[in-house]
Length: 334
Image (tube, rainbow, N blue to C red; front, top):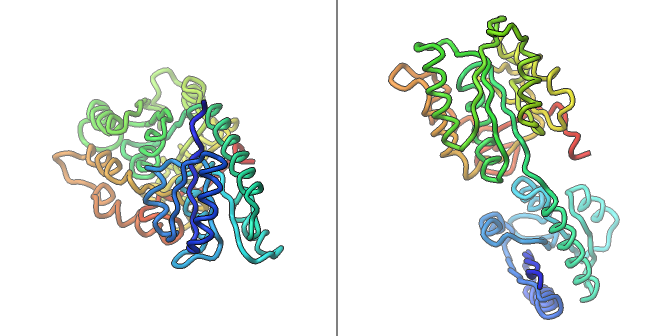
């Protein structure tokens, strides 16, 4: 016997909530959690692990549309049913643009409600069962580039079961040379269980004479990268820009490519995706804390600066702390 579907109902009308819950529990044998305040959903969704979310559009404190935008940051594939008492084409269009999977007008018959929940829940489980872990490659010019730009995102990938590889293309400019770079970078990678590759390929220094494009291409093939993060081209540092150019050539066949904010990004850095790293800031700070130990630390490695940067981006996304990305390619979502 399959496990019952788990459903969150977000509804401030107690009669509608009771009706929906009763239908799903008695006729669908679902496990149902009813929440009256949309602002509480984010705090319970990880523990409850729903198969389907049902929400009214008009809610106190936070609209259903805003709730879906928030949930999509945490659970992008969670099926969502939106309901409203207002039978309007405009409402339906707005709901669907907010990435709802279904739009229903109240009152909803028991058979219609149950049918949509069972169909969406079953489809979501089939999709989840067929989904394989992503192979994530994060590329930096110097030690600490990747951790500064997407350390929180990489921690989230690992928490989701994805494989993460960090590729650094030079030993950096701090004391200790390549041995110190390896020690610091491997300590950082171990915080989240990532793999580390350190290749001295900047400025034509690769021992085998390989170009940066060749080095990155080989790593992409070796790890089977499906997601690539690289420095932004909007950066004052010439080596960051060189890595950006090489990475985009090498990753021409990777479905998802995004650029992160570097330690010397210019005001021309224009992100168009804002990823919540709530729950992963401690891991990011631990990664940053692996660098420049016992020497004068660059400002961007300081915890207060890292958190302030992530907090500043939060005005554009859903979550308390955000890492920003310039999306180059997202073929997987097309």
